[in-house]
Length: 177
Image (cartoon, rainbow, N blue to C red; front, top):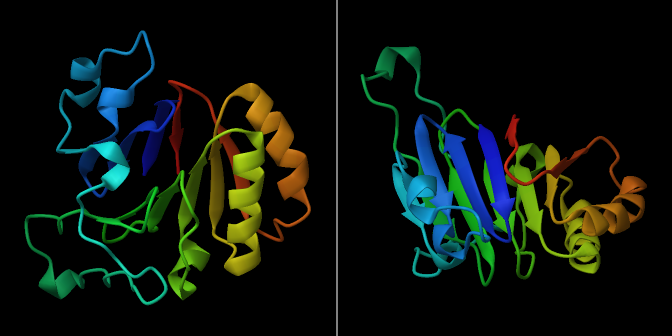
């Protein structure tokens, strides 16, 4: 999995052999939206509004394909709306990816192995991060915000990590997981 955050809620995701772009139309000034979606397999507008809904408290990831059952094609990458301002992306063989800018959805046991990306200002990142760490600490928590937001959130979240990785996404720099 590779994440490239461009600012706001615009992010390009390489996952499960596919390229997804979230909120290309909302890309910050200086980012060409047409170039951003060039080569993408799927574009997700409005942070997943219009995608099928998923109950994240009961959802379970698909099991990896057994070598005996493998085909030439990778299973399709799936995406769901996980509530207002939340998007769940799954690719077989990759950790589930939860993107959150709105309310934190209820999480199931699957979240322990997930990568969770939070978007917002310092107070928002702190509140969302605290909620996810309290509910079901994920494998990795990634913060997408400006430098001031990151500087405000890290001291608040540091004490509650207990084994969860914490990274800050920097605009236009890719993070490979």
